Image 1 (cartoon, one colour):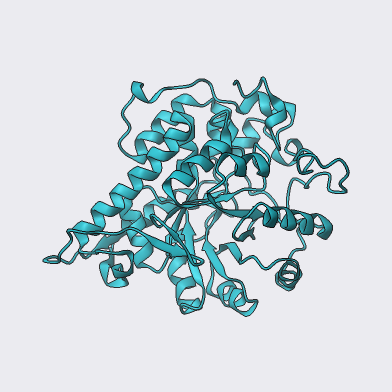
Image 2 (tube, helix red, strand yellow):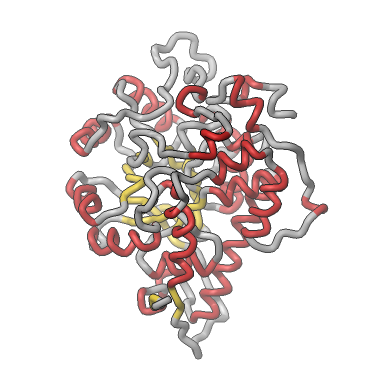
Length: 384
C-alpha cells in the first residue's frame, strides 16, 4: 500500500508534510548486499527524497555534536585478553529485569512511515523477532494499538513528551499501561526544537505542521483527549516527576541526561533508569558526545540505577565500548530508519543482526564470554 494513498494511517503528519516525506520507492533484498550499517546508510540516502533524508539525518547548527557522537568512539582503543575459552559467547542481558537477546535496542524516533509505508509496525515486528526492547515514540505514524497489534509479543517501552495538560498525560499513561508497555521513557531535552537548518532550508516547519490525530482508542466514541501539542511542556521540571509517579507504577526512565548533576538529581527523584543521550546531535549543539557523557553519568549513579546510552553507535565495537564504560545496553536511532528505507521490516532485522553479530565477534576476539565479563579494563582512551 502506498503511504500517501491511505493518509488515515498516520498519527502525526498534516497533508503538507505527508507529500514531502514519503519514500521514493521500494528495493527488494535480492537487489543488494549490505554488510554493515554504513552500507545501509548509503543505500537509504539513495532511496529517500532529499527532504526525507535531511529530516532523518538532520543535526542542530554546525553538526559538531552529531559528528562527535561517532568520532568519540574512535578515540577509544580496545585491550583484548587472550587464551580464554571463547567457544561459547553469550550476548544476552537484562534491562529492568527483562531478558533481551542482545544489549542492542531501538530508540524512539518519529515518523517511521517516511522510510517505509508500514512504519512502526515493521519496526515492532523486527524488534519482536530479535527479542529486544523497542521504545515506541509519541510521534508515530500509526496508533499505539496498531503497533502493538503488529507485534503482540514484543517488549515495548513508551516515550512520553510530557504535556502541559496533566489530564492528557494521565490518559496516555493509562493507555500504554493497558497495552502492556513495560516502562515510560521521558525525553527531557526538548523543551523547544533545536536549530535544525536542513528542515528550515526545506521549509519543513515541524512545530507548525506536525500534529497528532485523535488519540481515542479503537471503538471509543467519547473522549476528552483530542490531541497532543507538537512539543512538550516548557515548564516540566524535577518536581513534576512526582506527578507522574502518582499516576503510574511503570518504571520511569529519563532520556537526555548528560551530566553528573542531573544524574544525581535523577537518583534523588527515584527514577529507575537513565538514557545518556544528546538526541543524536539534533537539539543543543556542542554538547558532549554521548559516549563521553556516559562515563560521568555512570560514575554519578554508582550502580544504583541502570544507565543506557544512544548516539553514534555504528559498529559492534561501539557497542562493546559503551558496555565497557557502564551502559547496560545501547539504543539505535537513525540506523533503524536506514534499515526501513532499504528493506522495510527485513532491513531492520538485518541492521539488528549485523550489529549483534559484530558484537559477538568482538566479544570473542576480546576474550569476553558474556556481557557480564565486559569491564572498563577492556578499553583505553587514545591520545589522538
